Image (tube, rainbow, N blue to C red):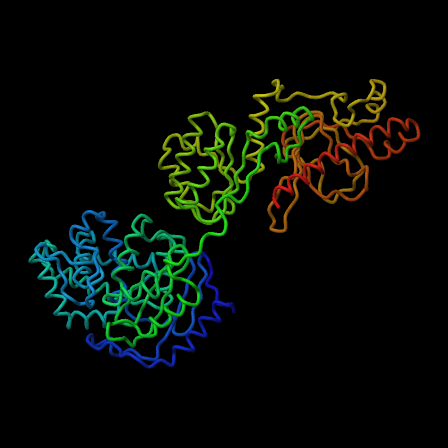
Length: 615
């Protein structure tokens, strides 16, 4: 769970300025038609802005409890959609704005269907659609739903509920009229009481900000990570908020402020900028339309100053493809033999890595898929790196799923890396692939492992098969290439054989550097520990390779840990023996150091090539 942020920041400073500016506004009157609401202090004033990634900024009376009132309507509408589906809900409640006040009796001629779910008539009809065998069960489900949005348990304000029930004669009349048109199929009494209860849920301005941000975050609470509403219904909720949420002020609101919003007569206002943030404002004095005066002023200022109008979004500066490369340009950390390196240089362009970024929706994912499909003929292995991706929605998941199937049908594997922070993608793939999920959805922790997996299969297809546990002879060591048999024999006489078990440390970081190692059998990997405490693989060596060779150059303590991946046999060459070799056989020592220099230059060129691709 993310932590609320109250540190000084430009955003918080700006909200404090807004609060200071509008706290002096004395226009409007506290609602009195519900007696309990008349007790509110007109000076209460809170602002809360919550980003879609869970950062919370709040000022003023942001923790002062008040009742949610009509702000409950869009959230209950979302639950009705989940319980019944769009067609059933639309058969009972329309979606057209009325231009009338919140308590207007606005029904379609003939059918009696309320015009939209934001007016009281539509909200009562929506409440009737909540599933449950008893009023208590339905109330419990409503409270559970509100808790998911707010990230905490919410309760009823019993005093406000009793006050609403005692004075709610107009709403009861609306209920009986809905029953007359069969919009309500049963006695309207319990439904109207449940409507009074949903309006009497106690919230704070902080709660409203989090609830709005949950809608901005496609139904996932950004503080808890819990799903409050299925993403497919968020668009419907935001649509009716955008067209009807501010009643007879809705047209002017969407024109000037440009965010889906909802107000309540207790003084609350929420506004949602999809994909970015949610806003909650609380100030009891209302204008003639029943909207918070300060709430409208704050949202208007935020929209204008921060460019939050939904219909004036700037063009995305970058595409979803951050960069792409092939295995001919960047290899995995496994150190390859000259023959393997040549094969990867020749055929590695068929292994393609795409590093993606930003938010993947239909438009951005389509651009990625378009780029890949136009290069399909040359792509034999595809790696999609999602480390820099912020979100993946269902439409993007569908496109990636369809791409995966097409590649699989062509016998071309797709590997995904860094997907743990994108649970929706994994869930979507699991639901669609079913029994084939484990086979087709290959997910690895990083690009290096994915590259090695693809390289190994490419090399298996292009090079003669090698025995998996084959030991090499000294004549196969990369640093002894071009040596005569006599020279190899002289060097071999200086080698000492060592054996290591799987997972055993061959070299520890900080050890004295006294010898270098020739790998005769098995595999060994080099690891360093990062500042975060995680372990990162730098290289993996195969038979014939050399490691620990820096000991010959600078004698500095070891800078990394080398571990046996399998059972390992090594030949070690002591640094002092190499120095003595310079006296007894200087020509051998010179040739040996030349080969060592060539090997180090080859690795340096590879590192430079990889760095240039990341610039």
